[in-house]
Length: 441
Image (cartoon, rainbow, N blue to C red; front, side):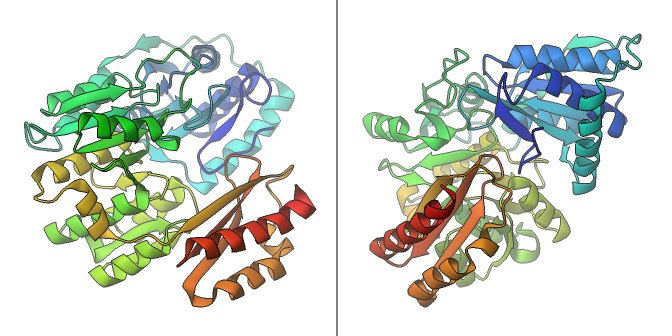
């Protein structure tokens, strides 16, 4: 049975993620969270409509009313859940290839599930899959198609900044052939920007394929070609972004957070003078925040962990190096388009170029990340390789750091090394990865 990762469940469609599985998951969610109405949206994968039908059938057979958004970015689905104070399901595998799909679950009000809710759902799901329950199948819930939810999401984003605040700003966006393919160009156009769009023609199989936040090469070239002030690359479900500056250089989530934290502190809206980040955040970010007089709260990987830290510490900002940016006062979850609008507004009003803004915000330490495919990502990797990890850290001393962890969404172990010199980071990472591969690969 698929296990919950750092953000819902995810797997290959038809083998790991089946219609039977998602149907059972939907029934369990409805029972555990006591749903009367559930909102469903999906990204552009070809398996999306099939999974949507299976989930809808399971819910309506329990008498649950279903509102279908069709293709919609995950943040829009969470926004709809918040507006109606109901549960929502996003059918998506985020940045994964089209062969995969998954389900992200938002509790009432568009919030991430608590650990207790997730545990109860997993336990009940195991029982549901074994029993293949047919209880209560005589009921029939109402199904409605609600495109107005997406319109409300668009309007809410446009309302976050003054009218025409992006006038004359040249922006290039890469929609990853995903859920933002129609929404993002519309929103930026409504704000007055001069928009060039690439990878916005989804066909069910090209989502995230050599494009988007995980592969912004084409976007970088397009920014330079059209002389754009900045570029934005989204992932398939639109909950994160990576930026490109005016020179074509990638600006990752760490830099975007550093820019936002400094700007929010300047405006006096950085609550408790702190920002929440994950263990993957670059050393350079921590040093930059120290220089700026901003505290940093560090969490495990995953935007749910970041959101929990934001709530527990009463913060207004948090995010990940991968580009999940959470503005707690404006959204219940990471929102790539919202973060892009805030960034574009800052660039449009600045006297400096985006490249200068990013450079001023922080200086990254060279970072090397190696993924090692393993049969079981549930192993205690730190315990198993205590000696090797300690030796790697000793080699770097105070000039870097080592992080080894299993992925929360894929069967891989990630080896991450940062150092003041690129050669040192590469050497230490390769040595450590080879040692792990020799025993597990």
